[in-house]
Amino acid sequence: MGSEWARDAERQAQMLTRDLSEVGLPKAYKVEYQRREARFALKTRGETLYFAARDFEGTNGPDWLALRLAVLSSAATSARPRAAPRGHDDLTSDGPESF
Image 1 (cartoon, helix red, strand yellow):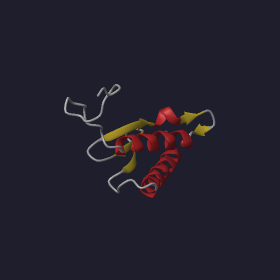
Image 2 (cartoon, rainbow, N blue to C red):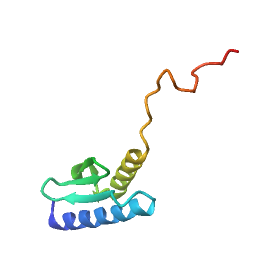
Image 3 (cartoon, rainbow, N blue to C red):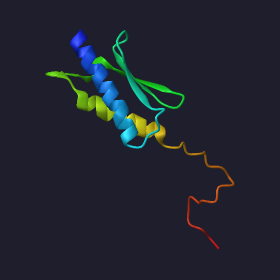
């Protein structure tokens, strides 16, 4: 990827980081462009998700919208609290109650 593309990718990563904070995600969420690996890294609480730059190369140049959608949806998914496994002491029922 060319240096102009890399500079544009770094700007996109900065804007994505700003967007993550604007939608209410903690400041712990950050997007970086890693030139050497030609990928974007979404750093969240304790995990890092990678997005290969070549996956967002369109016919007329970079498809920044596709990148933004992928990163924001991944961030939203990782921000959701993980559901606890249901156990026998769960108060919810899978079927109709019989009294």
